[in-house]
Image 1 (cartoon, rainbow, N blue to C red):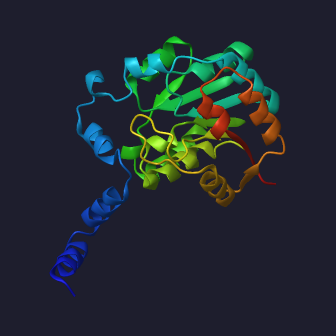
Image 2 (image 1 turned 60 degrees about the horizontal axis):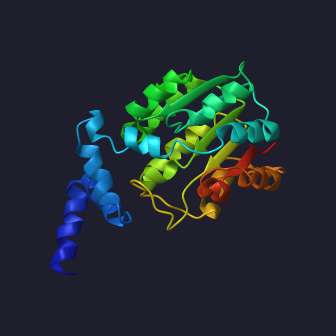
Length: 240
């Protein structure tokens, strides 16, 4: 056994938690260093990766059309959006169906302030710094929703945190979900996966692709939205 291996084994035995964090960091793709540098900054807005400029850049697209397509294929009296950003989609849902109970969850203070101004009820939650047991408690506190949404969010979390996001969206029997695919690129993307990866993850949670998924995807593709939504979005339903 080489010296390096003996040193690593000794570190693993003596500091198992730190060793596991280091191992995970080493396995992250390019961009991981920027992600961890961002995590170490002060939480002031000037330290936010997802600041006002980020949200203004992404403030495009036919979100009213997306809301209508979504509610046509997944009628809902209550909607949860995990990674709601600045609330564009939930605000559009409220315009389409004002009586809908909506809740948006995000970690960006800048985005949540904009969402609140748009009339969206929000809750601040940083999944990367929240323990799994606490996420379970929060899921219980939230209760049930008819529809949950998470669009282009999970790729911003290291892989070992993604289960916490999926646990929250599982508060509803119907889930509209999209995530960046390998090579897509973006701000602090550290968990880009093929669509099949998420289909398998949802299957383990008891979900299958909706019978309306292809029609839903075709209607989304016809909207004036950034290309990645049409490429990545799918509609899941809880089996049984």
